[in-house]
Length: 457
Image 1 (tube, helix red, strand yellow):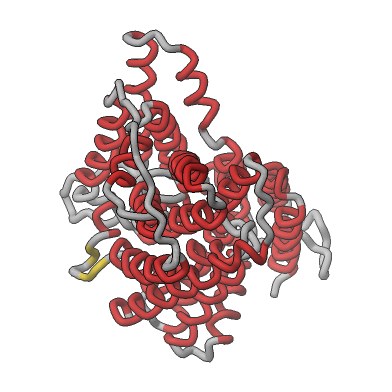
Image 2: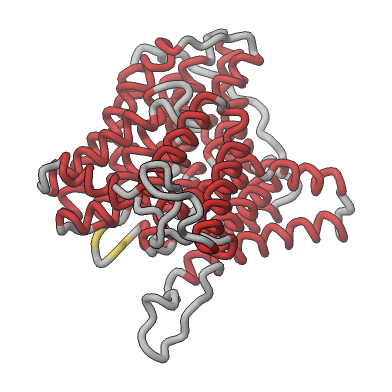
């Protein structure tokens, strides 16, 4: 490896260690690391020999990474999609429509066992189109309410809701940040998650995992046959936010049939790279303008802008720049070749390593930085072993998204669910969480792991 590759790899390793050790300041760590890469790249561009020779040389003639290069590495489409979708989801939650949907669902169930299964599946369906954490915040209070009526612990129910939310985040383009990142890297659109090149997309893989995990949930709650009385349904007075969310999804589906510039035929109309981001922002702004001019509700507007996850946006922005820096320094090629050699060039072994390595890593670290990094490595690995990169992309998403369900700290949805329980006076031990999370994860991952291989091998 060249001196700059070694240096970049060292900076990247320190960045990851700091992000794992100090989770509250991860965006600052990512942005700080990004600034370091830009400074080194700029100096290298201006004077390639300024740092001297040997191991401690921080630059060579092959490394160039200016401020403009860094700006180009930031995926503004992803940033806009996250911000716009989160804003619209906040308006949707405030309308109380999710609570009404949950009420209707519960009223149809015969007993406690089926309520937990139904709410878990319902949380998954909602999470396919709404942020995972937002889904937990919407549905967990419903579980708390009926558990109080039945005088039973809400811990198992809310854990199942959290892990189900995390599972279905991989089902659609807007379900989770990792899906948005993968769609950009693999050149996928909304419809590709359902059918791609005539084959079932990631949506159906996730549903297979959902069915397998639902069987596990049913088995774990098989003895809970208590009946529950249901009286009052939530009243929804404003359905417009629901139309906004549905409109966002429909618009994303519609533009998915228009190609990007890279895939358009000569002379064919193509869409800008930030099309999906513009759609998500536009629908959110329509909701904001309506609240301001028609309903004159300034508080909900403040709440909507405050609820946007600036933490994740800052983290991703920094990571985009860092990943661009390590690509320019040759680190991505080194890691990709190492994983390919570890799999001895066998596509099945390489695929297996990607899936289960992602499960293990995502059980202990946030899957967003992990996925963002691995998405740059996957094409290198696929090229090294001469295999379809889509197989590895889907394997990565399967392992990274579902792996977070192994532990209570592996996914934001799990942390949110445990936080709700803590406020209610329930302290959830890691062993208690894993009692439900481990079998759920294994059932879902194994189902997805097998299905992806047979569809895309």
